[in-house]
Amino acid sequence: MNEYELSLSSTAAGVPVAVESIPGAQVSGYLLAVRTGSRDEPEALMGISHLLEHVMFRGTKNRDNVRIMREMEAAGGQLNAFTSAEATAYFGVTLDRTAEVAKDLVSDIAVNPLIRQEDIDLERMIVLQEISMWENDPESYIHSLFARTLWDGHGLGRREAGEVDTVNALGEEDLRSYFEESYRVPEMAVIACGNVDSDDVLGWAEESFDPRAGPPGTRREPPRQHGSGLHVFPREGDHSYVAMGFPSYHASHPDRPALRALNTLLGGGGSSRLFQSVREEKGLVYSIFSTVDQHSDDGSLAAFFSSTEDNVEETVGTVMAELRRLLREGVEENELEKVKNMVRGGLVRSMESTTARLYRLARNYLLSGEAVPFVKDLERIEAVTEDDVMRVAGDLLRPERLNVTVYGKDTPELRSLDVGAFDL
View (cartoon, rainbow, N blue to C red):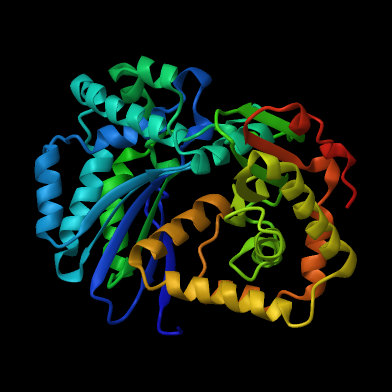
């Protein structure tokens, strides 16, 4: 692990550059991240970050979309992008001997897009299909509904793809203005991983992105309140999809390693407390798991499950009973070491992928302002104690901040569930 080298620098215009060199690697990956996402969009333009990401691949001043893909695939690589609540990123991963192709394509797409109306109309159809797929996949849609209720009107509660009405209304002038205002140096960061040289990456970043220098971008306001209580979104059918969660820590909070351990203890894997108590002991669900969602200024810890209509109330009660048991009885013998090994194993396995390394560094830098070697993450997990886990559990697992979101049949029995009466 010590053979990996992480270097940090910045271009003359101020673009941060993080380079993780891996001796012996046969691939090279390059990523440009732009600090703009769904939380930064005006309400009338919801979905513009994601739609623009799609349109950027339709053609540049130098290449059409077919040539873009042919060049990358001929180089033995992959070209892709993603949009999140807080960032949009473009990346290319290819063989180390064809690395120049990846760099050239990433910079061309991010700096020279045509943004034509005909391309917008075509990609809009694709995005609308994506929205429809999401809404018709209840296991995914419950995550959007939970975020909407938890962040209660704040931009963090918006889904990245936007809404049908706003996406339908977006045009060439909207996307071009958004590109010119958002894709500027103060909001850009460059990440590279694999068989890469830090001086070479810095030179590429300066040449490609420094000309995009501009004024500072959008200032962000953190959420001022969180939704709590029971929220029911009606759905036909006898199966219900449920999220149960609490506001949590932002991405740079010092207790995030302990939070990661707590999340794994509760709902990370088949030996977790929730999986064992809800599925293995009672057979109430097919699966149940918990997740941590972290942003630059807020976060959440939540459990997700689906069950038949008749089992929802009992499953909610069983989850609450398991949280209560943890708070009152603490961590079991050897439980924390098992959790640490699970977290460490997941980290190490993910680092076998150059794409995962790019994503990890980009996410960490954009959300927390730091980029550290993953061995530092391992050290932080190793340092977590039982007292740390219990302190975080006591801080976050509070009934007055509980949000229960249900996507299922709206019944009197469900509505009678008094979330505020739960005692932890």
